[in-house]
Amino acid sequence: MQQQRLAQFLLLSLFGLAGGARADDEPARAPDWRVSGFGTLGIAHASEREADYTSSVFKASGAGATRRWSADVDTRLGIQLDATLARRWSAVLQVVSEQGLDNTYRPRVEWANVKYQATPELALRAGRIALPVFLMADYRKVGYAYPWVRPPVEGYNVLPVTSSDGVDATLRWSAGPVRNASQVFYGHSAVTLVEPLHVYGRGGVGVSNTSDWGALSVRANVLSAEISSDIGSDIFDAFDAFGPAGQDLSRRYAMDHKRMMLANIGASYDPGTWFVMAEAGRTVTHSFLGATRSAYVGAGWRWHALTPYATWARVRAAGTTLGAGLPLGALPPALAPTAAALNAGLSFLLSTIPQQTSLAAGLRWDLRTNMALKVQYDRVTPHDGSRGTFINTTPRFQSERTSHVASVALDFVY
Image (tube, rainbow, N blue to C red; front, side):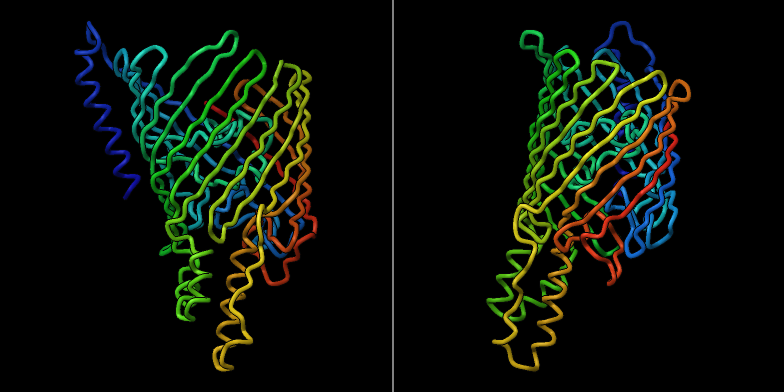
């Protein structure tokens, strides 16, 4: 329903702006429409049999426990409509189809916004806008645009939400040879996991700045939002019934109107024949999602149509991942089993804080213009009792066990 309202908003805006173009453009002209698209056809194999390797925690399954070979890890299809409506007005609508938590490929509105170019340097937008959080935020879904099969999950899975509904302003300015784009944004986001579980981000506000100097590009950003979710609500409601000790655990770990902060910085140096890129970030959630530090560094070399590359990535907890839980010895014997079960539930929630290291090597082959074939091998190791970025773990899953992931992907744009 929310996506339908967004699409209706954009279409009404398009027609409204097209009708009002004469006041802004003299003489009036017909809107300029352009349709483009992108996609990835991928398949991945994982050696892990007690969990699924995936590219996003917002997917229902992956490669490993559910099936040894999975096309759901990376496969997606997107289509984009760009419209220039007048001298200052334009709009974009992007729809992406990929596996979701409901195990379908139901299309999702990724972008739907209208832009007003107030001056040659200042642009204002309203609608659904990509969150400008990572180095590849503007093309995170477009596999053809980056060298790997997928961006390092240790960094990009920290914030699986990719867009928000709101407004932003971008000012372009120069300082000597350095070109800058400074962006401020405000918005809200809502993700349906599986009914009735949802994740909400309200009052999200952030600042992002991209600086380009020749072959060097640096992007730094800070985001803060109030997050809430139904995840674990039954556990925390039960904790509350145990009095002050349980209520203290709920206040500490429940994802209920908690202020989340994310800071990230990334840099890319690409003179043409080779490239190196790196990002580092930190998140604090004041909930069972904990606090994390993440980083990756990757490099590649271009030789004709071939680009071999390698990447190292890591995500670590920045705080405790072990909840003390309720003190069982101080409870009546009749309540101890219930308290023990609640403590186990809390420990499971805390185990979702990702702690993982990976090494990846791959080869990109640009078959033709706008089409690339990639093969990649990942060596992935969760740490310290965490499941890392794996999903659908079984009771036999073991942290510290290295998994081997092989992937093949065909990326294209049109």
